[in-house]
Image 1: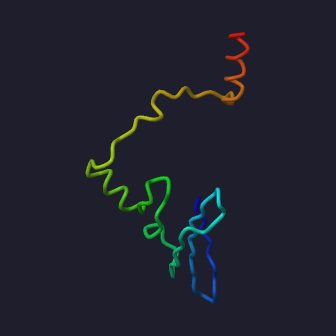
Image 2: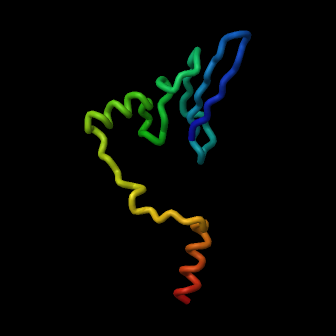
Image 3: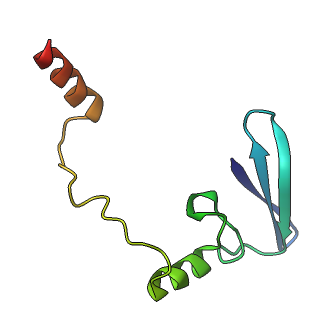
Length: 91
């Protein structure tokens, strides 16, 4: 898990990013940046890569394109209600 906190000291911004182990509740690593900038911050969701580098790798074809949302059925009804109706219908 990661957490980012920004401190403002006069006109300066300091950004601290912590990476935690959820099970042992320990700080695994941290990084201090002098300015707010998404290009410097690695992200767990994209394999601890920076957003800019991840986008460049995707455009070069190094990262596979996943077709996640085209098969999704959009509904006004929440998923938990849909699942409950399916379970009740099967019983």
